[in-house]
Each structure stands twice: as C-alpha cells, then as structure tokens.
Image 1: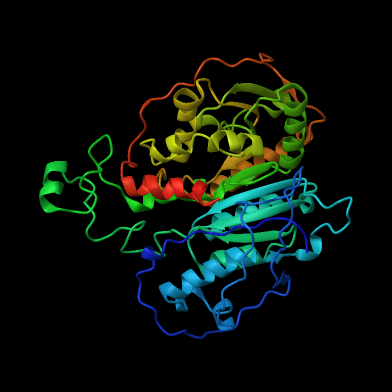
Image 2: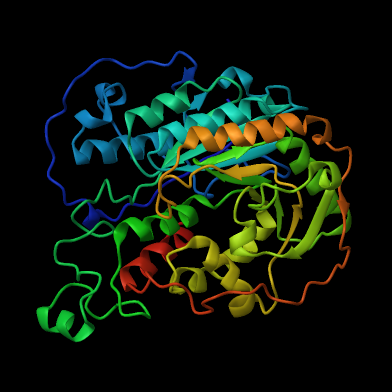
Length: 433
C-alpha cells in the first residue's frame, strides 16, 4: 500500500526456553480502521519515507488467527512471542485511509516514534495533546512497545488523527521473566560483593558495573529498547509515553529543520525545548539556541535525521559498552569518547514539549497527580496561545562551532550496565541490519 517501514527482529533461539501451552480463547477483538496486510518493501528512497532496519520483508509465520484477537493476559509466553514476531513483520497500518496515495504526495512530513511501557493513561494524554496539533494528519506515528498490555493496545487503536503502526521490542523482561535479558534466578543479586558472587558461582559474577553492582533487568531494558528502535530513515521525532506536546510542535519542528538545513547543516539534533516550564513565551516565542547536546536538558522532544543516526551507529561499540543504563547519558558520552567533539542541537528556548511523568516511573518524584501537571501545562499554553506558532526561528547565539562539552557529574557513567550479556545483545541490533 505504501513504502513506509519494515523491521525484522532477530530472536536468538536459545532465548526461547519457555514452555508452550495451548491457545486460549476470549472475546474477539477487531479494529475496522486496520488493514491486515503487510506493507510492501521498496527501494531506499530519499526524503521522509520511513524505513526501519533495512532488511527484506519475509513471509510471515503461520499464526493461528485467534492469536490476533485475544487479550494478552490470555496468551502464554510462547504465544506472546509469536504475536510480536508476526506483528513486527506484518507492520499493520491503523487509519490506512490517511496514508498519502498520490505519487506527488507519497512522503510524510515527519515520523514520530513513541517509546512506551505500560502507563496507558500517560500515553492517552500524549495522544490527546498531539491531536490538537495543526497538520497532525501529515505525520506517521510509530508506537514502540516493550510491554504487552491490553489497555496500551486499546489506547493506540483509538487514534484517528493520523496513520499509526505498532512495533514491539522482542527482548523485554515480560517475554523473558526468568532468563536473560530478564532476571535469571542464577544471576547475581545487585549488591553482592564480587568475590562472594564468584564463590557462589552466579552467572554474571565476573561482570559487575564500575560501582560493584550487578545488573537490574528493569533498568537495562530502557536502553536496550531505545537503541533497538532507533534505526530510521528520514526526519524522526522521538517522544515517550509520559510527554505532552504543545499545539504548535509540528510547526516548530518544521522551522527548526529548515534553519538547520540552511544554516547549521552539521547540527546533530533539533529540539522542542528543555525542561524549563517557566520561560516567557512573549519574549522567547521564536528564539532558539545552538548548543552542545546535554542529556539533562535536551533528551526530550528531540529529532534526528538519518545522517545523525549513521554517525551514532559508527560508535555502536561504545554505546553498547559504556557503563550507564541511561541511553541519554550514553549518547552524551559519545562526543568526548567517540567523536572528539560535542554533539550539537538546535533547540527552542521556550518549551514546546513537557514531561508529565514525575509521579511514576523509574525516577518518580513522589506524591503527585498526572492530572494536576497536565492542567498546569494546559493553562500555561492557553494563556500564551498568541505567542505560539512563530513564523520564523531566530538563533540567539549564532556561533557555528561548538567546542565546549556539556558538564557531567559522572564522566564514566552512572553504572548499571556492566554485564557482558547486555553489551552483546545491544551490539546485535546493528549487526542484525
């Protein structure tokens, strides 16, 4: 139907150790906005066509049709793996009627990739904010899951404002609960001293991180998922389930990309803004900075093109071995350790993307309500509506050469990524291409 995306996950057979069980049945699920046919492969094209992992589409496995219509909670582990493998190969398009068909309009303005886990309320809120954006029907939305949850699937299948494809991270802890890349019962406990771990003979005794701690699967999975899904062609905006976007976010991306192409061709990323929610839109509505990319400031609402991905991919070995379970601190480390100069970003001074996930997640800040955070953001945007949708972007520090690296508390990483098995699995994503 169009040349958008194709992906073939590689699943080592030794990981598939779970016992098969018989297929269960439940209420039949249907979405009449879904086309149940594979996206056909095509040549590598220029512009913003979307291609994920340049591998040919293979004939899908024979899968019991019932597996496509039952709830995830009714599936065995083997059935969940079959579902993921089938869906990743099928690349079903939701809202396929919105896919451009004219030969002169066969490219999307932008591809948006959302990394999701299991916070479906947050994902629903993100989609509601996206729906308000001007020209949202011209983008392709990709939702990359690392957890099979019926509520997550329902939220995605309710989207009506643009074409949507769901892909599924095939190495999640849900799929491998008691074997790597999940937590094997024979693995070393996090705080076990190395000599005691060696004496006990636990599996990863030789591979604590730089702080003497052993891996925690729930933490390592986020970095694995990020790198697995990062292989795209065209301009791609990366979001997460707990983000919220301003109604002009597509306008901002377009203006920043035009500015990058015309004046900053070596810039690595463009960004919708930082974590500062208190910037004055009146004063900063069209202002942007060209700066060194910093994890703690620029990791939200960032967009990259294929050239930047290819640049990062050349440092695959470093990315996959740097002892930090955070993908963003790992990206920042590439500048000093791999490129010999900082990665750069062209980013707005006033925020056009917001983080609403402080109440839950790996780094939650305690007692709060997502609804209160969203209400506060919506009030701020409503009060500043006259200053959204700028006509141009003005770079306030037009220095074209960025030499100074951003500051970092732990130059060698925050740990949690010392296990040799994580390194090898991570590196396999690029090799699989």
